[in-house]
Structures are given as C-alpha cells and as structure tokens.
Length: 66
Image (cartoon, rainbow, N blue to C red; front, side, top):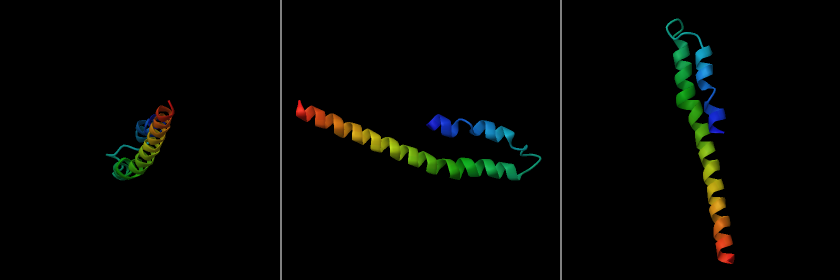
C-alpha cells in the first residue's frame, strides 16, 4: 500500500515543468512532499498499528485457551 501511494511520485514530479522555467512547480513538489504525503502516512501507520494490536490480542486469546 505504501509503494502504491508513494511509488508514482517520482513519475509525477518528472512530468512537471522544469523548476528553472517555472518556479511555481518547485513549490508544488514541496507542498506534495511536505503536506499531502504525511496525512496519508499517518493514516496508513494508524491502520497498521490497529491491525497489529488486533493480531496480538487474538494471539493472546489463543494462548490463554491452550
């Protein structure tokens, strides 16, 4: 999921106009990297932690039954 989210970014940045010809494109790149990516990473990290805690709880339940 992380690769699908962040993998295409270099291709998208390559498609943008040259930063020397158009200074605003550098701002777009930094805005995407500095602002847009982090909320997605936080959501992905939260999802991972919830799944890991659920797995630990299920494993502890199985160990108690045995």
